[in-house]
Length: 508
Image (cartoon, rainbow, N blue to C red; front, top):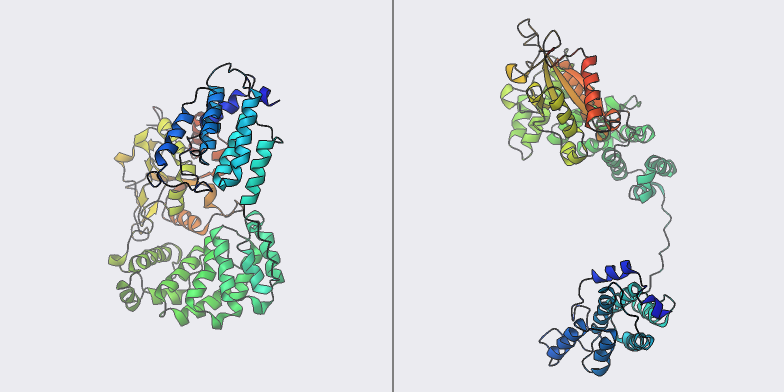
C-alpha cells in the first residue's frame, strides 16, 4: 500500500504543495537530546551542515537513506525534516517518478520512529506534516509514532475554572464583554438588566452600558429608558463628567427618552456643574443639541464672556470652540426665541471642516466614488462639486447649482455658498439659483436597526435644509441595489429628473 501511495500514481497536487514548503534551516527547530548548537558554536558544526547539503542534493530515496544510516554521529533532529522534504521533491520532480522500494521507505520510517523521542515539538510537527503530505497512511507506524510524541509534548489543558455566580450589576458588566452580546445584543443585555437589583446598578456599570449602546449604534428603547431613569434617580450623586457619558447615547442614537424628568434633571445638573467641568458641560449640550432640547439657561452660561475666557487657556480650547460654534449655529437656525448672549464672531471656527472620522475610516465601503463617477458621466465635471464645506462648516457630499428653470449650471460660474447667517442675509432676486445637495446615507449613518439616522447626521441635514439648501438623500438600500455603473447612472438620472432638473444640450 505504501509503495502505491508514493509511486507514480501519488497525488501531484499533494507533492506540489510539499515543494512549496520553505527549506528547513538547521538549529531553527530548537535544541533536542542531540545537543544542537548554533553554527560555529560546536566543533561538529561544519560536518552537520555538510550532511544537510548532502541530503538536500540526494538524487534518489536510496541515497537519502544511505546518508542518514552511514553518519549516525552527525545526524541531528532537524535532518529528518530535510530528508522528508527532499523525498517529496524527488517524487514530484518527474512526471512519472519510479516506484520507491518498500524496504527503503520502511527503513526511513524506522529511523524517524527510533529517533523521534529526542525531537522537540516543532521538529515533530514538521515531520508529521511532511509525512502526511507524502501520503504515509494515517494509521501507519510513522504517523502514529509522531502523533503520540506530539501528544506527549503538548502541555495538558488546565481544567475550566468554575464560573462564579454573578449577581446584579456584575452580571450586566460581564454581559457587556460577552461574545453573545455581539450576536444578540439587545436580548442579552435586557435580560441581564432585568436580573439586576436597583442597588446593584452603579454609575460605572451604567456608563459601560451607555458607551456600549453608543459605540455599537444600538437604539434599544428599554435600555435607554433604564439609563434615563437611573440618571433621574441618582441625580444628586452624579457629577457632570459621569452625566456626559450617560447622555451620550441619547444624542448619538437620536432618542429622546419618555422619562418626564429627564430634561428637568439635566437642567439642574448643568446649573450646578457648569462652572466645574467646562468640557463636560459642552458635551452634554452637544447631545441635547442633537435632540433639539437646548436649555436657554445653560446657553446663557456657555456663551458668557467669563466662560469663553476661562476655556481659552485650557488644552481643549479648540474642541470647545468648535462645539460652541455648532451650538451657536443651532441657536441661529432653530431657536428664534433666544435673546441671550451669542458666541462672538472672532471665536467661531468651522464646525466640521472635513468628512467625519467614520466616513474616512470606512471610505473603501462608501458609495461616494461610484456616485462621483456617475455624476461625472451624467452631468460633466464642471457641474458639481464634491466634499465642499459650506458655511458655517458643514461638509457636503455633492453640490449642484440649479437655475430657476431647473437647468444644472456650471459651478465655476456660480457662488456655491448660500449666505450665512440666513437671517441677516435673506434671499433676494439677485441670486435665484438653487443649491442642491446630494446626501449619501450610508449604512453606518444609521442606528443599527437601519431606520433612524444618527443624531449627528440628522443635525447636519436639518441645518443644511434650514440654511436653504435643497437636499436629495441617496439611501444605502437604493445604492446597494444598483448593479454596476450603467444602473447607477439611470438611478441618478431618475432622482435628478424627479426634482425637475435638466442638463446637457437641452438643459443649458
